Length: 282
Image (cartoon, rainbow, N blue to C red; front, side, top):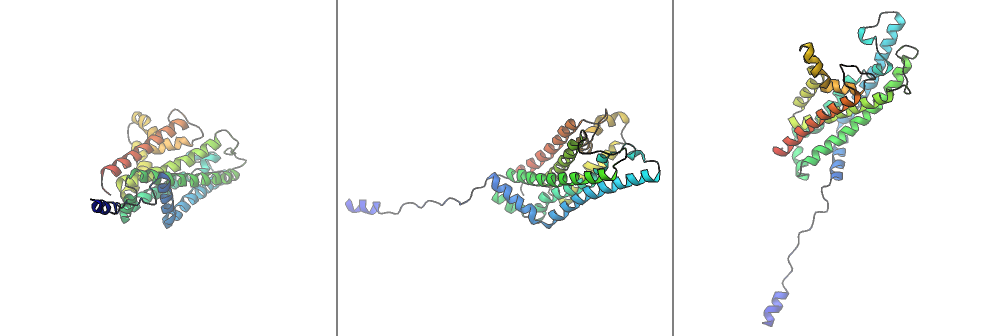
């Protein structure tokens, strides 16, 4: 009996599996997506284009306005009520395409290359990947857009100084409008990220983005006038424009209402992307 007891007591203890040295946390997923964004050459090129569009087109618009005044030519109907703010923000229509397209590439690009499988294998819960991509690129787009509008406005304001369009940062509503323009472009980047994850196609995501921001408002103008007034203010592009409009009337939303409507569109795009990410395979 003693021999059996000794033999049993000398048996090796069961080997415990070593815990992995790293855990998947929200902070680490954010750092991973941050590194991915800046490792792509397209990020630098497209962000640079967005910044150039904001500044260059704003300056060109202000210079064109000033040349019309100096030549004595009658102003175009679109320029009759122009201000230094509206002239400096003329480039937002072009910058939104650059930032939105880059947002699509951030997510849909991984699906086209197959890298999304590695990403989801490292983060099995999936949804943190979407939230991190949207948060990282949204903040990057917000920073670039805010920088662009605050550079474009003083230059455009200097060009039209002394005219009826002149404004300065100290004028009521100017800083709010500039911040609203930066926020709008940042949210456009988030919507692009969501569309890329929802459609999993670069071409499809870009097509839907361009259609929603630029084509649908034109199609709405074909509807009866009574319908236009009920639908047009709530379209993504029109709600976004009201976020940085200096003044609004009965046909447009207030800046706060425009922000809430645009946030709803952003949340809808993210919800669709989250649903597909959870319900379907990579």
